[in-house]
Image 1 (tube, rainbow, N blue to C red):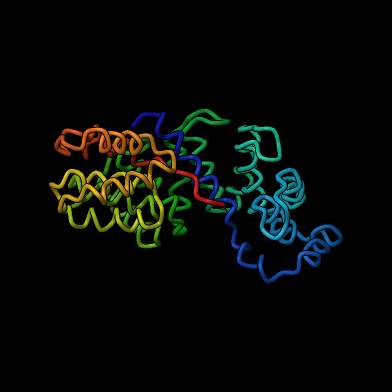
Image 2 (image 1 turned 30 degrees about the vertical axis):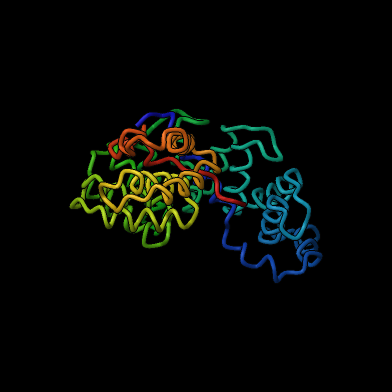
Length: 300
């Protein structure tokens, strides 16, 4: 697994930190009351909630700088969700200068409190060598801590480490087990990854029907990787009935999200309609392993 692909893992994992448990309160809370609690009372939960709202433009005009200011107030009180979200903003340069070292510091503070989101994000930083010396063994340790709390992205990432033998002995059966745990929670990437394991017969008996079912679940959630993978299955027509119209539709959905492989496949489908699908595709099932840990950023 090349580090080029691993880099893309950061996006969804880090974005996940913004989806703190308090987000469900946003619609019901009075903005001014929330602002009073955040500013006058110094309430860390209110500061984090309001910061989240500014970061996402929910109920207020989007303002990353104001989001970072509020999150800093809560982070300074040791509030793990704020530390993690602020770490994400430093990692991406939103409202603050991009600073991976500061992102790692903030993730570490929250991870030390047992916060699964921070453990996962910090694990990625170790796996990718961003802001800290690359260390796959430490990445696995952190993913395991978060996975043991039932956190689906960590289970998915840890599954990929087992599948690729990075930081731990390769074990496809354990990878499948972890993907299944996350897939059962509706995690689209886990569904995609598990589908690929079934397609290739790695860690489970080969089963194209189950592979297609899982890829369809992930595709229906808008996962570009799954849309491209399922599109290939329809175009190839070896594991499920061939359907070029559905293949093109799926490639288009993934291509619209910037998936380069889908863009290429879509172009080939359009310019060479008389060529057999198996000859048009430049991506083959065995190559899917290289994409097992890539992710696209979901809408905020």
